[in-house]
Amino acid sequence: MLIKTVKGTKDIMPNQVYRWHYVEKLFRNIAERYGYKEIRTPLFEYTELFSRGVGDTTDIVQKEMYTFNDNKGRSLSLKPEGTASAVRAFLENKIYAEPQPTKLYYETSCYRYEEPQSGRQREFHQFGVEIFGAESMLADAEIISLADEFLKECGIEELKLRINSVGCPSCREKYKSALRDYFRPHLSKLCDTCKVRFERNPMRIIDCKSPQDKELALGAPSILNYLCDDCKASFDELKENLDTLGIEYEIDPTIVRGLDYYTKTAFEFVTEKIGAQGTVCGGGRYDNLMYEIGEQDVPGVGFGLGIERLLLLMENCGVEIPEPDGMDALIVVLGEEARTIGLKLTNELRQKGLKVEMDLMERNIKGQMKHADRLGVRYAVVIGDDEILNGEAQVRDMRISEQKSVPFHRLYEELSK
Ligand code: ATP
Ligand code: MG
Image (cartoon, rainbow, N blue to C red; front, side, top):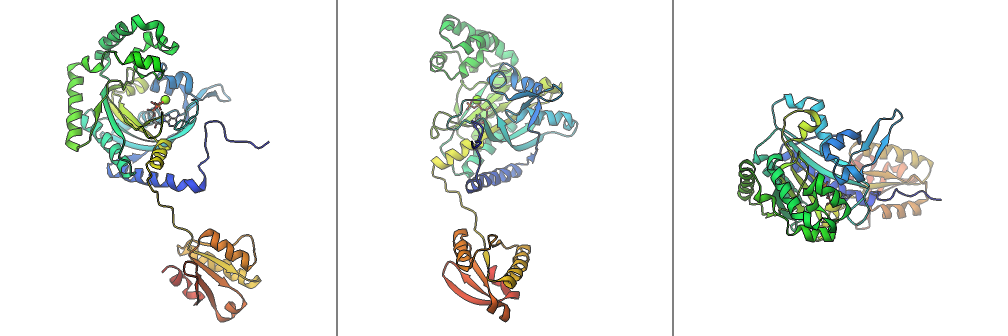
């Protein structure tokens, strides 16, 4: 039986890959304009990095991770997201000892054991950026601005930015107990996961996707009424910075990241155009994460942007992605001697930078001309006995079906016109 892709994974076939190249180029370009450097980290890490860095009360760590033991019995996990690895690399390479901030960007595949559906896969890809070392809300505004600008450059206008502040561990204590007071009378109605969250991590109840819990959460107290002076001032500053940049936003107190190392800013870019999985980009500040992973006091802020969802949205919005240019020429050969000359010519023209093919199937002339059509080449360059005698090829312009003789030594000049 034919072996198929693993559930929740997808091939990106050659006829689709240009769409990926298109957004990758835009992302790389904008990240570099904003002064970010690319980082590439391994596909798998010690499991502990994620249980500490993502949080062992999160769904990601509890239910969604691909975890396995290697031959020596060490627990390893495939990356479920990009931030923890970037933080580890920053700590391990002692980048914190250099002048800050450190501004990083990446593209990574991520792995989560989730039920596949539109916009949700088990292997998916993210663009991400992180700023380490900057406490200022200028940093938060910068990454939001980068995401906003990038999405616009992708041709998408309808994403809505939602922002919130999740406070800091000190203001959250009061908020959590207010949340428990609110949910306590409804405890029996909450889903099983949220019954556990109630004690360990009540902020995550607000994030729950079960319809019943969602409805209950509507009346829950808002974190924004519990922020301490410092967190409140930061949130105001962020809003001012976004106003200065002319970036529109809505305040949404239901965006939570209920872990102690997430602090202050939380945001999402959401759309209704790709179905239930409408969050294309999510991010925020994590001032206590470095400490959790490596006992360094370095603030951080960043986002992750799902590439599959981005491409789906672009498709649904009718964004036209230009297809790459086709081949310049196919060298069409007739006979042994022509084949040798054709092989050499193909090589020379490629070395000079043209996109040139020779038929590897050794078809007859009719077959080769058909192949030229299929490839969509601009020119078919025909070499037969007569051409060898005269030292010139028949160059056929496939678009206008016109043909002319061109000496071999002038082929490059002619074809690169
Ligand atoms: P969701 O609400 O969809 O579960 P999340 O909160 O788990 O998202 P993050 O961990 O913030 O997502 O990841 C950042 C981005 O990565 C998401 O906004 C989304 O675009 C993308 N993403 C997350 N999980 C998946 C998945 N299983 N398949 C495809 N894209 C995903
Ligand atoms: Mg998720």
